[in-house]
Amino acid sequence: DEYLFRPVPLLYRTWLYNRFYRQKIIPPDSNDYGMMALALGHRAIDAPVTAGRWSPMVCYAPMVMAITFVGDRFLGLLSVIAFAITACATLTMNNPDMY
Image (cartoon, rainbow, N blue to C red):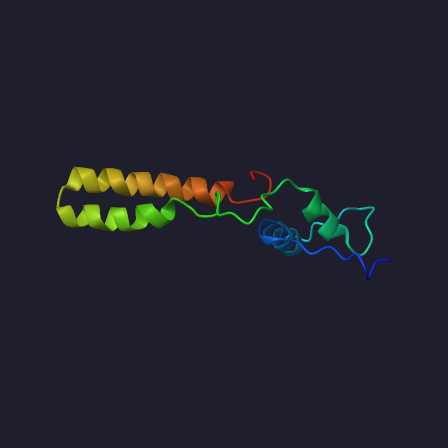
């Protein structure tokens, strides 16, 4: 029965489902729950842990601010470059294909 066993996606699966919905990715031979089946078919962390659910940018942003107050231009430039590289990597890798 489709109303008795309706799947509910967990945290990462909701992220995958929302990504598929925004990009309008619908499997060609699917029924009403095609995107849900696609999201449930991906590998994801379903355990209630915080493993890998935050970005290093959370630590790097305050670090760059603190280093720029030190007054060393070379160290400040290196930290801004490292911040930019990490930001690019974070934005590039934050999609279901790279997950």
